Image (cartoon, rainbow, N blue to C red; front, top):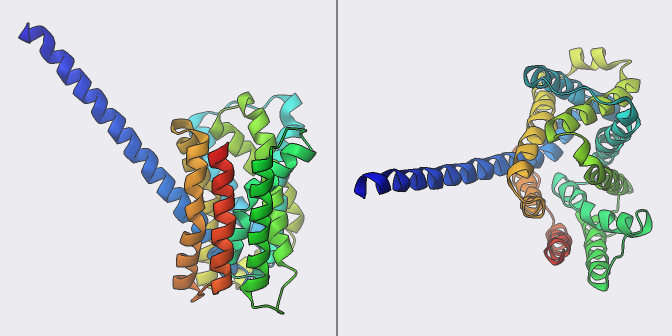
Length: 305
């Protein structure tokens, strides 16, 4: 009996160890994503010291596209179906082109911490799109969460630079959040067509294609930009724009989407911490209050769901 039962115990122990190691890898990937996307507002602010907002977006995603091409060639991802090309173009436009152009033009008007908080309002716009565009039923609780979250958005915008010093460019950050929510809503409804890596690659490539309108003058800015700025842009292109997306696809593959999304609400505190180190930015008390309101609303929205 002992000879028969011993392998069962060993197999069970090995399986438990594999499960724990898988959990550790998912947790590390999640922390990596939060750190990458937390760096993004500060990296954009540094990049804008020497680059036009359009040139910055293009260079960032040219770097990401090249890296994605290397990954795609090694993984041998499938070619897109012709009937899916319009969908992939739309996903790329909202996830990359419009989102990052609005973000780059709006970033000089707000602090890095406030920018990160406003981007996290994306679930509020997703709920509004679900009701007004996709005709889904939105109950009273979700309406309350959306309203509460929009109050927090107003607090962040009004309190970032102090009352009476509101910068209209903060609205561009909200446009970036809205654009991302459109991408998320469409991607969620069509994600069954391709695996996560394939969808990310074609989305990034399509968005980069639209950004090519900013190609004239890019080489001159690269040559004239200080080394510190070019390094910051390189980090933007490689980490938040490429590796973070791949890590996030890995997290979603091994974790329930709602639980994984909840972890992203740690991104604003990470962005504030990184901005304080790299830029010396300290968020105003009103931004912190607004962040609590916005994040509590989106957490309540997802918990209810």
